[in-house]
Image 1 (tube, rainbow, N blue to C red):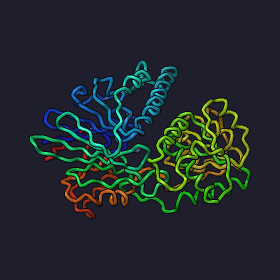
Image 2 (image 1 turned 90 degrees about the vertical axis):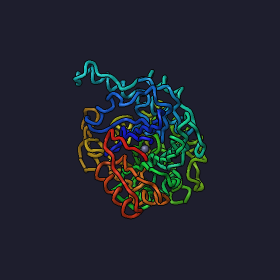
Image 3 (image 1 turned 135 degrees about the horizontal axis):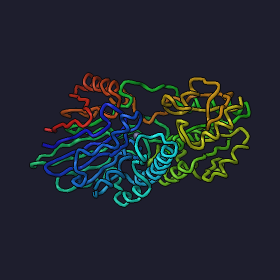
Image 4 (image 1 turned 90 degrees about the horizontal axis):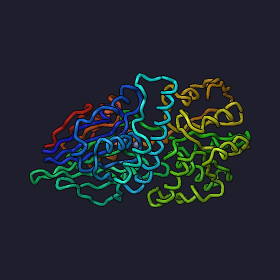
Length: 458
Ligand SMILES: [Zn+2]
């Protein structure tokens, strides 16, 4: 019978990776980076439990690094098969993997220079050359098209919302003339989200592997558009600049789109939006190439590139020129958690002025500057200097890319006959909580697998 091995995202939210075997053939779903605590990150270096040369194909659900961040390493370890993903995921993966390689190389150099490492010398998990080496293996498969892999597997992608190109994987494994259908949710987005479409409902597979990031939480109900209109209005009334730290792929485009909707609805007169991040500019161009992939709400994504109020900045000189920018205006820059990047320069310039607002739009891990600002710290350290915080600090709620537990039940509601639902990609409490709801409300058998656990699929 087919076997499913949980190689990552088991009782944790990162490192997504699953191996499905049928007969002597194998396919892999996702190949993500472990992120967060050091004990988790160390797993990125672990030797694989399987022979990478034996894997016939790798199927990627979407382009976040916790789903694709170990692809260059897998290829370095000998995997030579095709890497299937949706067309937008292919384009975005190129941008994200190159950036990740660059950051890792820089970090390793920094650690070596400062002698902050026990490893001599510190090495990046992969570098730019490793990324270039894996890119030719990528192959795009549009949503809804079936693809066969060897003689044992067939799969298709279904839209998962969440992020441009994100998909669930509907996999069929054949062994001894019998077919077993396994649905991998990938990351499931919210319903009625900004810019991203609703996820396509789950199919009634024999087994479902479902994410549980928000398995024990519900999202706020106030529409982001209303919260954002208020923050913009108050900042502009003071003659200030709204500073928005945003992840370059996904959140930056959603924020521009949301502001265009506010202007189109006549709630505010047009204002200038400056997108200051080379990666966000690249990602925005990719977003604009797939107009049909976004929610159709009258605005589309045309403005992301062609609105005369939206300004895209790639070069350092353009970025520095923004220091003289006067309000009312908006600056969007990365990183989203203020852990690095150009946003830090803007914070140094803008935070001491009470007319400005810093708007946090996503989760801020403890220890980050974003967290310190949300905790109302009045003095923060940026680039070894102290910065007094007089600007207003606000938080935009409800922008999460993940379905909450009620939305996950809605997504799963078509699943009737599945022999088991595996809950992954969530902290243990979240996965357990969602498992309980799935059992109680949908009457399905559930299991929360451990790292490297092997499940037989009878
Ligand atoms: Zn994701």
